[in-house]
Length: 138
Image 1 (cartoon, rainbow, N blue to C red):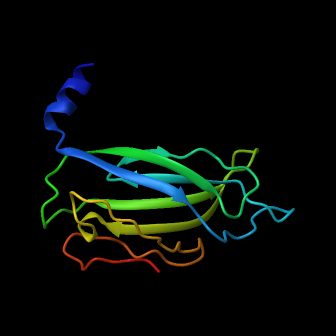
Image 2: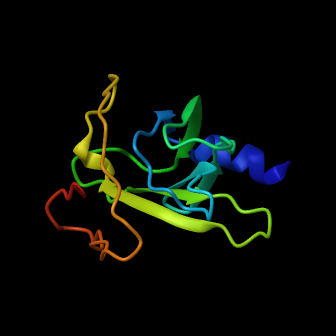
Image 3: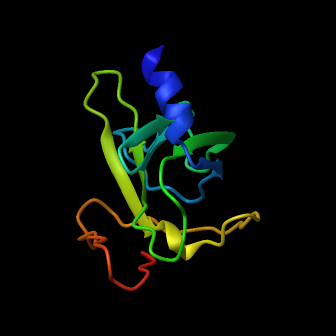
């Protein structure tokens, strides 16, 4: 409870991520199926969507609220990483793909709807370091 009160004092705002869905995911299982879910990571904060069973075109239609603890000014170093996994009953979920970008790619204050491509697990994901140009993984 003490941490919650402290966090509310230090929190700058909230980032709303609207996880709509995905299209044309690769077949991941022996039977050519995929049970996808998203893991969304914003500077250490982690949230996950529900698993959509047996779908290569999942629709999550869920909003994820991420607390922001820094001023989202032009020098923001806030990184967003979205990982798509294929859920497996055994527990060793398979990575389908990754998308990363810097927070200052978006304009604060207004909705921005855009589809982003995932990098496959065998492709190298560029690191996002402070001071680099905005990187959009395509």
